[in-house]
Image (cartoon, rainbow, N blue to C red; front, side, top):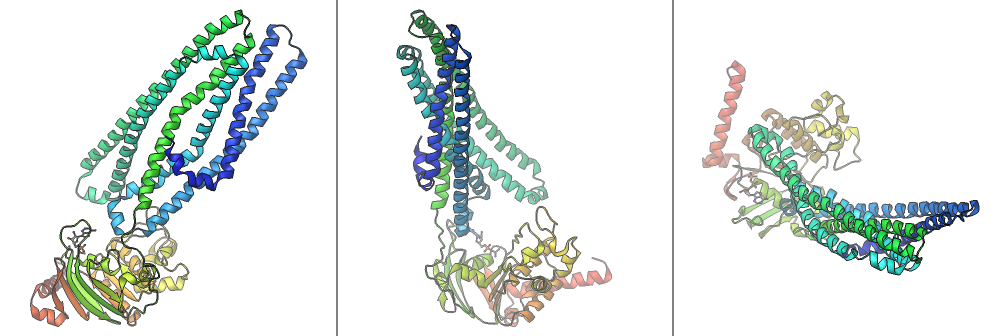
Length: 589
Ligand code: ADP
């Protein structure tokens, strides 16, 4: 049960002053609160014996007032200290987690789903924060109140009465332990159910268009209600036990009260204690109930925190397979690319995604990559960008193995426009200048013009200030692609990788953008994967990928002469183009 405190020891050490003040304040409050029943008991006794004077009443009232004020001050002090500390812990751990996320590779993101990671970053951190704040309060308070109260009952009121009336207490400890354990077990189940529901929401919202497109709303809704039913069911179990907990405790403390009345009355009749003592004793009993009730909640809090901490720790202990080399090269002209991939298999896959891919490119050269979906085009980029490491063979930039190049440096100098264009929920301008935040409006416009998106942006209601994403304008696929292109070009990469980056842009605009590129990029290596052969027909080298291997290679003319897949594809696309153009002319299509 105390495992979580051991795990958080580093933080308590870091904030030992704040915690010492808080714990000291809490203990002082417990001691002060034990004085109150005595003062009230004394007043009752004075009244019962008819010796209450205004002076003694005033003095007792003053004592209560002073105790109240001091407790107010102490409570403020420990609360502010503890809650500041627990918020600090949450932010420290969140930063640690986020920093870790930024270092993780694709394999990690394949393994952990977004919904799960989000649950860690919110729920789990919250649970840990709660231990460091509310958990410490409840623990210190329950222990100190119990000790101080039992001490007062035993030594100040009457030890025999105390012994006789706390007979049901072992039962209480047994019940709270037993129910507490059951509560923890069911709670784990409810956390799990919540996490998987979270995943479902994430997936469904992200894929809503696809779901609708396939008319799968009902199935999706059914799956989702199943997940929520699970959450309800597991929470119902938690609530059932929770509901049994408080009444059980109250019944046992009620039993204590009955014993107190019986033995208390007897002791008064024997002259062992006064009426005031019995009243004070009842107050103490009331004081004891809270720590007992809190014990169950405390176990719950700590268990939750413990599970949450382990989950976060598990994430933090995951090491990225691809790591930036210590002292890696960060001085390269990026004028030569030498690729020799003998074999690459995705982790967990049974067969290689790429085999025997060899080519060399020099400054100013362009490689065109074509091939069916699933032939390995994106995989090739994944390796060139070192999202994964080649199993056999190597990739060299200027003769330097990519594994020896500093990763940040590599990604700063190699521009990649992928098929998925994630834009951030900020202005169009900030999206374009994402990699170079210092860029001014002229700079931004230069690149949006290159990517043929400038005119579109001017038509948005707030031009370059228009928000993109959930709260902003909805963009067409082609517009998103062109903004991503502008964003990558703005980084002025030495090497440019385009992975089917213009699939949603029409052929004419694609040609314009490619012509703009050529004029802009003096030299530089470019790799362009595309479905449209017209976009890469002028490339220096063209490779056709099939099942992860190069099936044809050469330039446009030599590939046409080969009369293989490439020539076939080219002729087919030419025909389609003619039909479209013809259709446009005579309006039949
Ligand atoms: P393309 O870009 O030509 O459509 P990909 O490079 O995406 O092709 O895919 C090549 C092959 O690798 C496919 O069989 C695909 O299923 C597999 N693949 C792609 N990404 C992964 C991954 N992250 N893990 C395992 N297999 C993958």
